[in-house]
Length: 312
Image (tube, rainbow, N blue to C red; front, side, top):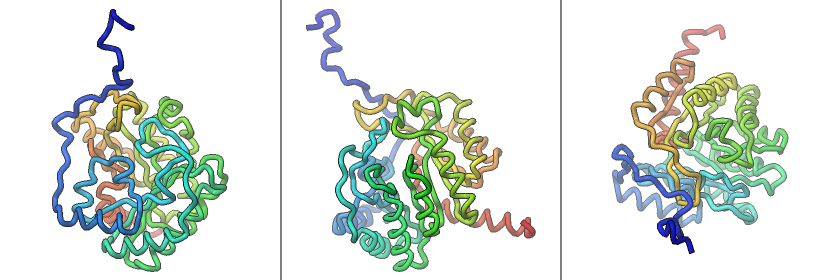
């Protein structure tokens, strides 16, 4: 027994730091919140809002917004920051494309976000399944814009083209963190594989908006964050999200620090000056947070650019 330091016996691996005053969430409309929950649960769907313990779930569900997580609730990878469970996934649900399309209709979504767990067990990483869901959702909701938040399809070749060919309005893939932290934070992924995925999507179809996000508070430096911005701009990424990493449990990657809102505002200003079309940057910013509003802004900005440069 450790008698010299008894306070360290059974101590959590990575104690969770107390949240600062600026990280607060709220429910805006409890009736809508429970209605959204009922639709999702009735159809036995998964959402990243629940599985990843998103801090904005109350606000988003109160507005009847939800991000559907397809291909099950079990991921084949074990990213150190993520609260989605890891293990052997179940078989794909062949009825899932129709379920997602119907839920989108019942929620009356004008913009739907569809993400997934990593499915390294599948030959194409689930790209074909993504494609089917996009096509079925559009068929049943022809006025709804569709945003996908995909895995990196690492070592799967060009399977991502199946998704691009289904023509989502937004193709999002999160870079998550800076290159120096990848082996600790995203051990199953590679930084430049993610950058190249985004670059390739834009090369195939310039009309698709591309989007990526990074978390702060993992131990990255300011210069590393600025370099990530430059790398994403070289890949012609349109939209950048910057949010605070919130450590889910004591077993997850340790939080280095809470970043003040002023620093998020400064990074937003820098990113916009560098050339991103849209930047969302705040402690509670997440990939799909206010995604519908941001898509509308992106579309208007692109239309404005086109009218200013009609020959391009």
